[in-house]
Image (cartoon, rainbow, N blue to C red; front, side, top):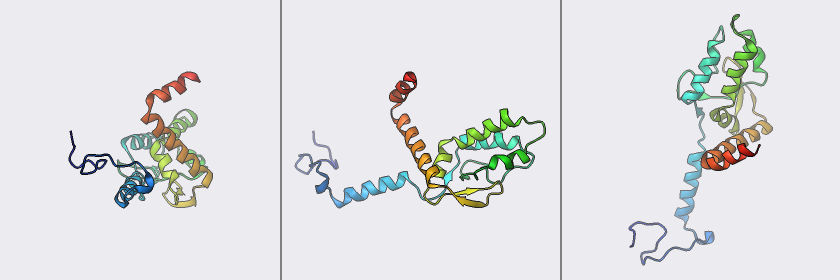
Length: 168
């Protein structure tokens, strides 16, 4: 049965060749559009997960940092190297620094959205007040790209990631 508007078929019903050198300009434009949709140029927007971890971290501090997202859709930005010292200075007296704050900071900085923010080509690290202080190093950017790719791969093929965990 012939399918109408099937891009893989000619009008005669024969399949189009899969030779990339014979691909149409329209197919190349569609592929570029698809790839650019996966890599937006703007800031990475915070999701519920990111906001929840930022809120957990904010609850441990006497003064809330401007750099953390307050709601879904706020931009996620890479944090300054050594920000732990600045966080300790703002830590509530009753909060345990190692048990609570480190876990909250780790959860926030290990999210996929945070890695995506670090993977941007022109990404800048920010201090607690939200000011850009330095660019993300190429080494950290590459590591973030690999982390995002690994998570996408494990999400695409969960059986394979379960097999990897079982063999460790």
